[in-house]
Image 1 (cartoon, rainbow, N blue to C red):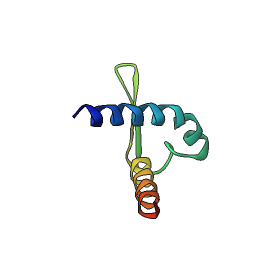
Image 2 (tube, rainbow, N blue to C red):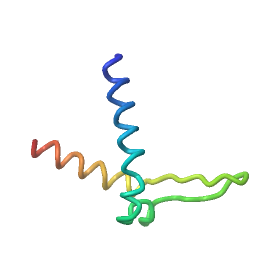
Image 3 (tube, one colour):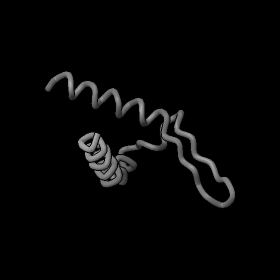
Length: 64
């Protein structure tokens, strides 16, 4: 259980570090990514970007 918690934490850190670079490539602005304001806060739900990144990760894991 602890090992999975560490893996998830490291994955979230990696995603947080890579997010600005991915936004320059266009992720986060794809059709299907939802962005709206609620009570003065901007909420972002990256549905299409998540699907594409999942497919890329699956392809990389299949190769390795």
